[in-house]
Every structure is written in C-alpha cells, then in structure tokens.
Amino acid sequence: MRRGVAAAAGSLVTGFGRLPCPRKPILLTPRVDRLRARVVGRRVAEVGRIGKRVALRIDSGDRLVIEPRMTGLVGSGEPPSATYLRVELALDGPLARVWFWDLRGLGKVRLYTAEEFDDELGPSRIGPDGLAVTGADLRSRLGTSRRAVKVALLDQRAVAGIGNIYAAEILHAAGLDPGARCARLTARAWGRLAEATRLVLDEAIRHEGSSLGDGAYRNRLNELGSYQLRHRVYGREGLPCGRCGVAIARIVQAQRSTYFCPGCQRGR
DNA sequence: CATATGTCCTGAGAGC
DNA sequence: TGCTCTCAGGACATAT
Image (tube, rainbow, N blue to C red):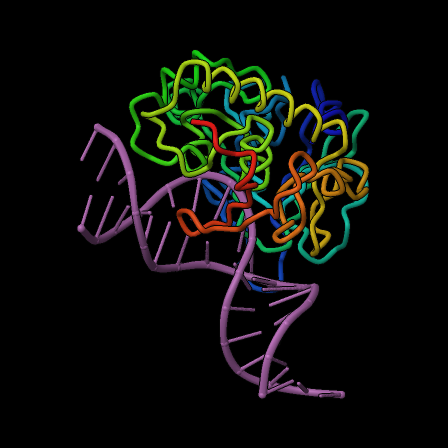
C-alpha cells in the first residue's frame, strides 16, 4: 500500500479486470467496461493516499480510488491467494500489475473524475491526515460536537486514517476517557489527543500495522504486521494496564468495541 | 443541521 | 465431529 504500489507511477495501463469471486463481485463504479475504457491506454501519473484509501491519479485527470476497508489489500506481485482477488490492473513498467485482494469483500473501487474527486474526497469532506493532525485541527472540527470523543475520532471528516483499533490506542496514549464528550474537552486535551494520534499512527506504521486473528491484514510484502503485540488496550480486556495496573475494560460505543483503562484514562 | 443505527461480507471461535 | 450462533471491521444510506 505504500512503497510497493508507489512504483506504479509513470506506468502505462495495459489492462483492467474484475475477477470472479466466491459470491458477489466487488463493487465497481462505474461499471467494469466503462471504467476499463477510461484507464487502459493511459498512464498512472501519481500514486497517493487519502486517509485509508489508495488513489492513483490517471494522466487524464481521473482518479482510481481503492478503498480496502479492514480486510482488503492493495499490492503488486503475488496476492495472498487467488481466491478473493477482486481487481487487477495490468501495467507496462517496473510493476507488471497492481491488484486489489479483499477477503470479506466490503471494499470498493471507484474511478472519479477530477471534479468528483475534489467534491467527494477533497479537504471539505476528508479531514487532515492523522500523521500530521494538530490540536487546533481537532478542536476546530470537533470542539462543539456532543459526541463521545472515541466515536468522533472515527469520523474521517474530522481526521483521516483512524480506525477502531487505533482510536482506542490513541485515547490510551493521551490518557483520555473514551466516553468524554468532545464539547467538554479543553484545548490542552485536544493538543494531547493530536500528539497521541501522530505518535500512535507513526509507531503502528513502523511495525507494519495490526494483524488480528483472521490474519487478513498484511503489509505490501504479504507479511503479517506486529503492532498487535504492542497494543496497550485493544483486545486486552481484563489484562492489567501497563501504565497503572488496573484491568483493561471493554465497552460498546456506536456498536463498536472500545477498550480502555478505567484507571489512567480519566482525562477530559 | 447533528447524531444514531442498520447494512454489506467471511471466517474464527464458542457453545452445544 | 459437526452444527449453529455471534462477532469483527469501515463507510455510507437511512432514520431520528
């Protein structure tokens, strides 16, 4: 998703296909023949990322956006298996192919025109990237919200790139109560939250992400991540907190598990 | 407008 | 053993 596919920049697209899969084929917009007509014969001008999405800018100005969600992988070379290989892009360049593999099939692939891309994935719709977010960014976007801070951190319009595992880890690093209402947080708390966001995401990337029980999450070389071994709270219900020793608790917020330490996450 | 809930999918693991 | 049930995850459509 990072270095591997980045080498596609400059290559000519020679083919595009959606592969047959066990059940429903992956959701493509527009339909496959129309999409193919708009990318084959053109060059990949740039490979980028918008939060959790991979975006290939085509020299026509269109953007091919792959949204892997939890169990999707974007890569080149050999995919994890032939099963669940959903979409394939053939290239004439240093990478012969870029594929999208998705175990559960919740991911999406869409080709946007330049205008659609700006409207739907531009800064007005997707917040600043978590690796560079500031306290002022968070406060300006969430400072008046009545939502619990954990739920708000998952809103990609506020900050891009945080999922359920990292929301929990970030709040623990910041010492904040996941149930705290955004509107009650101080400027100082927003600053700690932004700093924790940058640190946790950076550390998670350096450890190649979190591969959970289903083993679906892999890095660009099809290797398991190791950040799950460094989780301080996620998936650790009942175990002692490494910072204060109190047992980690699990609650449900907006139908998602939240793991946190009731001992040292009291900040608001 | 802001916020809350249901939905898509597959495989792992629990429980019987 | 082998079945059924529940759960996990991200983003969006729909409901409040």
